[in-house]
Amino acid sequence: MNYEVHKALIDREIESHLAELIALNDNLADHPEVSGQEVETSRKLVELLRGHGYTVEHPYAGLPTAFRAVYGADCHSHKIAILTEYDALPEIGHACGHCLSGSISILAALALRELQDALDADIHLVGTPVEETDGAKCGMAERGVFDGYDMAVMVHLYNSNLLGPKLQALACYEYTFHGKAAHASAAPWEGVNALNAVQLMFHAIDMMRQHVRPDAQFHGVVRDGGKAPNIVPETASAEFFIRALDKEYLRRLIQQTDRCAEGAAIATGTTWEKQETACVYDNLKPNPTGIAALAEIYQELGLPLNGDPDKIFGSSDAGNVSFVCPTFHPCLQVVDGDVAIHTRAFAEAMKTDRAHQALAAGARIIARMAAKIFGDPDRVRGLREDFTA
Image (cartoon, rainbow, N blue to C red; front, side, top):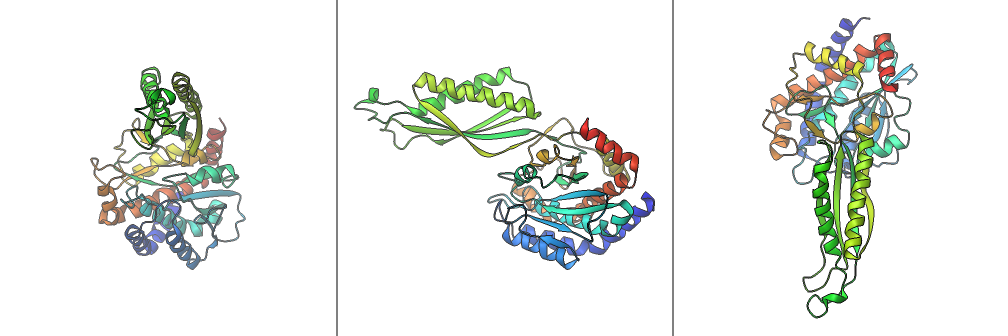
């Protein structure tokens, strides 16, 4: 079968299952569960997939709300992972659109079930929870979950259309300083002020900003500033996010941040330690062959590439997967350009007619990408060569 025939089959299957997936999306939007607590959400997804003939491992990869769903004998030459996100944000629900993104992934997989033989590819749905906090894909990648896949893909909702957003590598650490308590009025000279070290670290990082690349970013908050004003703080801590567009440069920034902590400790007579508060996110490894296929698909679907490809999108644990296998994270517009993700307005848009149209469009993007690449040996080869380059 050629690509045009594949497209017709995909479109027919999407239309056949669209109403069911709209209902799923709307239900998830109404019942958001935050990272690590996606118990009912994952159960709903798993029940739907089992109802459509999938063999599902749940829990999966040591995570209680993760899953892997396989349709058929799982015996083809190629393997594709459709990444499925479904966690929500505290207080503002699905303001990142994971209810819709997860539903898109499932609809795409349903549309590809009968094409596995023609594409000689097994289509796996991999349920990846905890994206908003600790990035479950990071640990899953380290444990080998994505080894052996020829491609991984998902669609993220956004306020514009992008073939591949700029994802920053991200590291998160809490720096804790230890001093000595004393009465702040009667004998302050007996104390060693740990909060002073935190303050100096912030100043040092602010001074460092002028000597780093434009894509480098530092965000910090004080986690512990002491217990009472009349007690010299014997412990104080701050958490910092450190970002860069390249994971190698990120390592250098982490070293420079550590030196800021060390300098602050020397200046104040304190000691310091750091603790990782989330796994390190990698940047998204580029793959021109896959991006070229996505560009064709967006044109076929009449989706204008109206996003700024140079604008920093943020960070995602999908970046870690991209260093294990070719990985794609295209963005699909679901709101007007002035509506940002991680806002109440974005969450409120998840059940609109526009969101339901995006559900079908997103599924077409994923399914057509699988058909376009794995129906063409030259593209499969190009995908692999780009990854290993």
